[in-house]
Every structure is written in C-alpha cells, then in structure tokens.
Image (cartoon, rainbow, N blue to C red; front, side, top):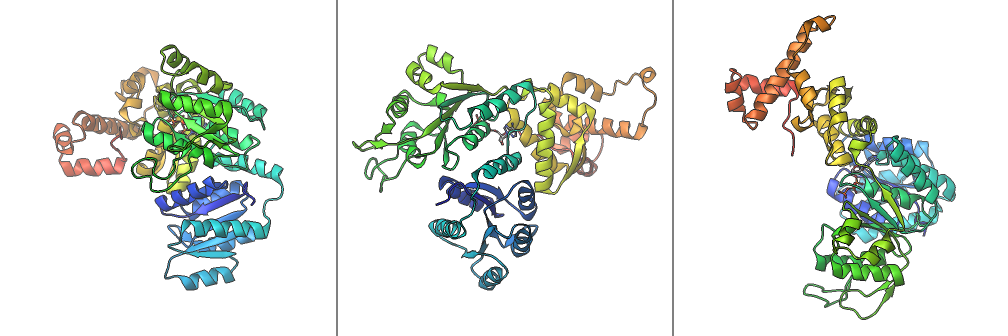
Length: 464
Ligand SMILES: Nc1ncnc2c1ncn2[C@@H]1O[C@H](COP(=O)(O)OP(=O)(O)OP(=O)(O)O)[C@@H](O)[C@H]1O
C-alpha cells in the first residue's frame, strides 16, 4: 500500500473532518483538511495531492463543481465524493463527471479506508518520492513552521541537517511555542516519513489510562477492558511517536518508557507477553528536565536516553520581528478561512504586539488573529482591537491622547476623536466588567447608543 500518499480532505463538519483526518493519518497518509471550497483551492495552490475526498455540500460551494475544477488542473488525482443518504443521484452524476468512487453517508470508517486503499492501489499514485518531499514543504505553509529570526533559522537548518536521521529528539520550549509543529517537520524530513507519526500528550491523561494508551491492553486487564486494544507504540511501529509533555510522566511509566528505548519492547497492560517495536521517539516538554532530574522527579537514565539531540524553541517574545511575520501568516490563513479582509496593523498595534510578553506564545498569537478576523472582519487592526493585557504602558499613554501640539505637523481631527472615543468606550467597558448598563451610565449615554457604537466600532470583549 502506498502510504506516503497525500490526501486533501474537504468536509465542513468540524468533528467529522477531525475524525476522518485522524483515521487517515493513523493509517499513514498525509492529510490536509479543509472546511470549505476556498481553503481547498488554497491547499491545491500550494501543493499536489494524490487524492481528494470531497463532501458535496460545502458552505461556499458545491463539491461536484470543485471536483470538475480539480480534475481540470490535475487529471491524475484520485477523487472520492461523499454524499448524503438521499443524494444517490448526485453520487452517480459525480462518477459520471469524473469521480473515481463515492461514499454514501453515514458510512463505516473502515469502509472509507478500504476505498482509499483500493483507489491508491489501482491508480499507482505517487511514484516520485523526491518531488513528494518538496510538495510537503510547500503545503506545510498552511500550518507550518514560520520564522526568520536567527534562532528559528538555526532550527530549520538543524532539521534539514538531521535529514533522514532516526535519532531520538528532545524538544524543549514553553507551551504554545511550536513543539508539535517542529516534531512534525522532523518527521516529514526523516527516513520514516512514509509511516505514521503518532502523537500523545502525556500531561493530559491520568496515569492508568496513559499506560494503556501508550502500551495497549489485553481483554480483561481492567474493568471495562472488554477487548484487547493496541497502544500508540504499536500503532507507531515503523514510524515515530511524539510524546508531548514527557516531563509530566509518572515514575512508573518512566521505567516502562526507558525499557522501550533500551530494548525496543514492552508488555501491554495485563499481558505477560512482550511486543517488539521499532519506533523513533520525539519527546517534548515545557519543563526544565535537568531541574526535574535534580529534584528527583525525572529519571536521570531516561533523561540521557531522550536527550540524544536536544532542540530548543525560543519563546515568542524572543523572536523579534517574527511576531509580525506570524501575524501576517495567520492573517492570510484566517482571512481566507473566515472570508474577512483584515489588511494589516497600525503602527501602534505593531508596537504593542512587539513589546507584549506572549505567555501563550504562538498559540496565543494565532488565537488573537483568529478573533480579530472573526469580530472585526475588515480594515486595519488598531490598539483598541487588542485585549487590554497586550497594550503596553507606552501604548496606553499614546491612547490617552497626550498629544504635544508643538510636535506634530497636523492632526486628523475626526480620526483622532474617533480613536479617543474607542478608547474611552473600551476602558469604560473594562472598568465595569463589560456590564453595558453601568458603562453607558458612566459615559452619560443610553445603553442602545452604546451597543450601537460597540457594534459599529467592532469593540469586543477579550477572551481569557
Ligand atoms: N513557527 C510556527 N509557524 C506557524 N505556526 C506555528 C508555529 N509555531 C507554532 N505554530 C502554531 O501555534 C500553535 C501551537 O503550536 P504547537 O501545538 O506546536 O505548540 P506546543 O509547543 O506543542 O504547545 P504545547 O506545549 O501546549 O503542546 C499551533 O496552532 C501551531 O500550528
């Protein structure tokens, strides 16, 4: 089976899209998922796909139309159409118009895997692995590794240098700094890229459950274990496993993991029988593992086994202008996803973002851009569009409009007064915990006028 194949999955239902994506990825396919026609076109502009699995009803278009468009651009791409139960005629039409196969919803997940595998086999898709790697890199821009500062360039070079190496990697970096993105980049350039990268967050799962998630269990191993189930290590066999938040792993599981690293074998929960696996380990942590070792919370032998090649992701606040680069990257992405038209940032907003601490790192920045695209929809991002925690003391002073009349050539009175008004409304809302009645009282206006202004100005409550 050709498992290094690239699949574009177009489905608007978030939950269903995620389930299908995970299923295909666990089976070794590289999947780019798009919630609508616009994102699907964007993905196709960035790279070539072996196959497209396409829902007929999309929020911004029709899957059949999209299929015809894709076919024109790439006659070799395999296409499977997903249709609703009542749309059998549509499915037949789709095949007549060029789809290779169709799936009638609801369908069993196994059924989809069988169809995908069969289609891959019959079409003998994806012959040239070299060009394939290049395509991964170009599609990577959708979710990928954006950064130009010295530290990020150095990391990118290291990833390239590591090339097809199989070594164990330990990634450190604060939460949200991109450890998983880096792990995926390492996997894609590694020699196992045609096999799955299975991820698990060791900090998010209670110990007993984590043991069974990692190593699997046999039937009857514990209450509720009604049948045997393989663990992530077994699923990752031949490929790699990404162990996120490894510093949170309990001492008991640290011992079991050490054994996998040393002997490449383990026993599923409730079993005496060892299973041998060949899995590359990429681990990550936001903790200082040396400190954890010194404090006796992390095994020293395991630390040395993991720390074969240490890679560190600097926090976002130390990446200088990369902050603005990432803003642009996410603006492109979310403008296209949400149909908004945010064109950039005012100088003050740029300054505010450059001097902000970013405790949530790239994830926090991504969330901010998503929120602005959702709520503001168009125009330039001003400081009044930013959550108050992001506005530095300096920007706050500027916002207080302490303008030195002798220092400026001219003043755009309307724009300045508008900004002052934005600032006063936002501050009043914050002071009264977004209680509009009290804020309106304070500003000596009626509530309806305040609500209208909030809407018109696109002022929004920051999410914590
Ligand atoms: N260099 C980058 N370029 C583009 N997007 C990035 C980059 N780094 C991180 N992101 C995005 O930021 C978000 C957080 O990244 P990721 O999950 O990799 O962080 P993490 O360090 O693994 O976080 P945690 O420790 O909380 O698991 C993701 O949406 C990811 O796509």
